[in-house]
Structures are given as C-alpha cells and as structure tokens.
Image (tube, rainbow, N blue to C red; front, side):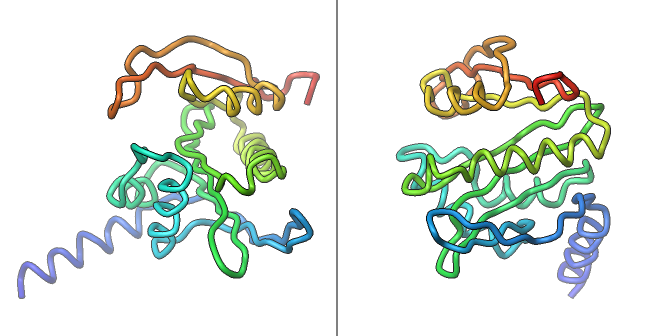
Amino acid sequence: MWKESSLLRWFLRILSKKKNVLFLPKQIKIKKELLTMRTVKYRDIKDLLSVEREVYAVDIPWNRTAFFMELSSDVPHLYLLVESTQEVIGFIGCRFESGDAHITNFAVRPRYQGAGIGTLFIAEIKTMAKQLKCHQLSLEVRLSNKDAQRLYRQLGFVSKSIKQDYYFQDKEDALDMVFLIGRKEE
C-alpha cells in the first residue's frame, strides 16, 4: 500500500508542476479534409509513437518515457498535434526557455508531407514564441534530412552550426538551425 500511495503522490506532484502553454483547439482544412489542431495529452503518446514509426523507418527518436517526461516537464512547453477523425497526422513539440523557443520533436505522416501541416505547426510555434517574448526559434535536423532543411529555410531558418554525433542511435551529425524573431522578413 505504501508504494502505491507514494507513487501516486509523485505522479500528482509532477502533474501539478507541469507548465504547458495554453493553446485553444482549432479546425484546419488540408487536402479537402477538416482536421483539428490541439495540444497533446498523455493519452496521445501511443499515437505520437505511431507517427514516429511511420516517419522514421528504423530508429524512432523518442520512446514513451521521453514523451511522458517532456509532457511532465516544469519547463514551459507546447506540444501540438493535428488529427483527423481516424488518426493523428503529425505533431510538434517546443520548449520555451531563456528567450529561446526550442523545437524538440516534429513529425508529419509521409502521405501528408507537403500539404502545409509543417508550415502551420511552425507558424503556431512562432506565434507562441512572440507572445512569450522569445528572441529566437531553434532546432536540430539530421544532415541527411534535406527535405526538412529545405522547409526550415523556406520558413526563414538559417544554419548556425553542425553538432557532431548528435543522434544517439547512429551518431549522425545534426544541423543546428535558428529563426530570429522580429526580423523584417516575417
């Protein structure tokens, strides 16, 4: 009995500390389909893992524990997903800390890539970052992921540096990219 109650107290303490940023659900139309964009909840983790398995053929970046810890974090954060009536189509995660809006995880199912969902996700993160007085958005992307790099550049991100052996599974390098908030091109 003691173990159960102390585990429950620990879990409730974590939930009471979390600082997710407020986002109201909205309807969006993509490919003649009405979709919903809303915040991620704990019950969505299995669906996020499904998206990752489809997007990243071999090594999925995050496991269930990583998502749980991120959603439970006391660092201000926003995790959004887009869903149809049948499935989660994509998601994005961002932490807001020390003037930086850092995109931690981002994936869209391949059949929806190129439809504008990624652009909508980044636009929502930019809007929230401005409201929270962040001066930049940042992210890392695999050097081999040229499609994602092209999208980020189209959205105003620039290359900052290369992080050697960044990805744990295969030691691939990452391109560190930033978007400076408040530039005239916005």
